[in-house]
Amino acid sequence: MSNHASTSTTSATQPTRTNSQWIRGMVYTALFGALFIAGSFIKINLGFTPVPISLQTFAIMLAGGLLGAVYGFWSTFIVVALTAIGLPLMNGSGGIAQITGPTGGFIWMYPVSAFLIGWASDRIFAGRKKLNRVQQLTLLLALFAFGSLLVYISGVPWLAHVVDSEKYDTVTGALRAGMYPFLPGDAIKAVVATLVIISLKPVLPAIRPFNKK
Image 1 (cartoon, helix red, strand yellow):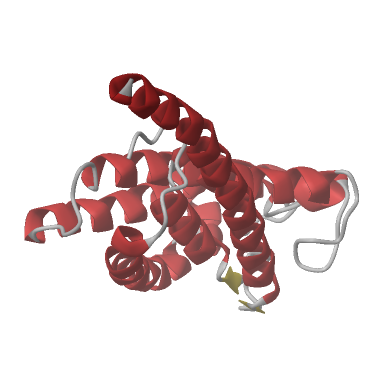
Image 2 (cartoon, one colour):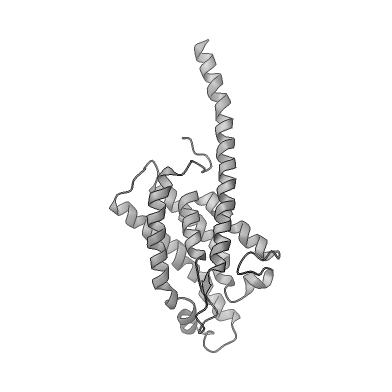
């Protein structure tokens, strides 16, 4: 009888735990989506390029690094999708023009970037509360590679394609306007995001799908 009762209790608590993780995941998805939106409003126009400095990539690094691949992806994708249908969520404007403009190539890659950062972070932290120096460096490189360099793969060519200017319509010109000036700031964002993730992820409540803990 005791074994049967124990089995019944375990079966009863499993759906409750799963529902709790799902609800918690939705809440964090909304919170990090709001952080992503806020990051798009914090920007500095450089004048010589239509691409501003913003905190969007920093928000993406945190979303993927802290929430994991699935919820990190959705926290970003939902904002991009709602912006595309007209909600003024990114830079105070919305609509198709927002995601097909000069910075459209960067915007498309943001959800993919958050997913890959989450994928890497989950594997680096798998079964660990603390990271050693090598693991910390691996996390930093993953944030910089997926949160910065990957975004330029689509962002720079699209900038050269969309902007009708001799300064930007070549690969060299697009790199000078859409990538080179931002790399130092991206490196700083990656370092700060790494420190935040290392500090918060071990204490963040379990929200990742299929988490058996």
